[in-house]
Length: 396
Ligand code: NZQ
Ligand code: ZN
Image (cartoon, rainbow, N blue to C red; front, side):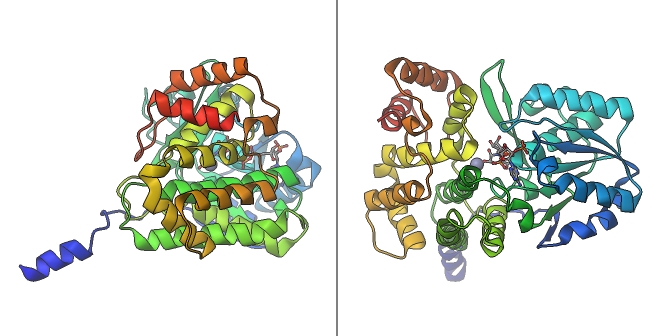
């Protein structure tokens, strides 16, 4: 009896399952192994890309070389926009149906990878992609997805999430499906050398925000996951700070790329009482929907405001976070200030005015947008009063 009680009081992590089927290739030159993998997935691929960077910087040519080596036929679909939209996904699904592809290669950042995941499921399961991501219909099968990543940020290369916008409904939603894990991902840090300063900054913010979302799950018993949060954020701060002033530094690109993958591949979430909080992401998505702001920019604006709004509830956890990432004894407010200062230092916006959004009328329109969508977290429940407080803070 004594033993049982002791165990219960000591072992208080929530039960969890570790499942991550993505085969990940990391390091300079991994692209040369792509042909060896391609042959396992069929004879005809959809090559999905964004709005031109992959062609402009030669990554397209490197991938085509691999297709040729493997003797794989490919059909290009390009033009996926940052903050991807459901209409582009629908069009790409039609292309897949017309030519009968066996698998998809996503060459790009998170927007291309997320679109590829949704296209894969909607095409193979023959369902409307919006009905699928809003869980009106179930997707039960997929075609394989191979990722060649060109931007370090989202972690989509090794996770089961896909995020998509619908301009008609003014919503941006995250879609979870265990089938969303890419089959293989190729992460060559040299592919990120051409990412401009602003998107490099947004990527660093995004990965830090993922670690924070994990940390603000309910409870404080997943101590190893907490320490992983500290490690990932410290890595991002130490090397991110250097990288934004040294964009051609491959060693720094490598550090940030690996940190971003680990920030959202499960490692930071195991054993927690809720699967993160995500209130900040869900709130911030409304800035993407209304103003088409880059994802990372929405997070450096909303996260400090969210932390301040719930400072009393989060007090002890903010102090812990401060110690984990800055190795100092800090109050909750001091922790928030130091995070905000880092965001400013690397050139990330912390107020909407930094992205050119101002005015009372805009403020009211945005508040209404938030109220309409009712963003929520798994741990901290937000009321309409809280929405108003956050909007006041980001509009200062
Ligand atoms: O469109 P192209 O021409 O390719 O240009 C892109 C785009 O303009 C450019 N870019 C990408 N790689 C480059 C490059 N430019 C130069 N050199 C390169 N190597 O960068 C711009 C941004 O690309 P994007 O893919 O939109 O960025 P990111 O990777 O940050 O993805 C953002 C999307 O992912 C979602 C976000 O909400 C947003 O829609 N997220 C996905 C998550 C997931 N699946 O787990 C989680 C995240 O929280 C996030 O919500
Ligand atoms: Zn994010």
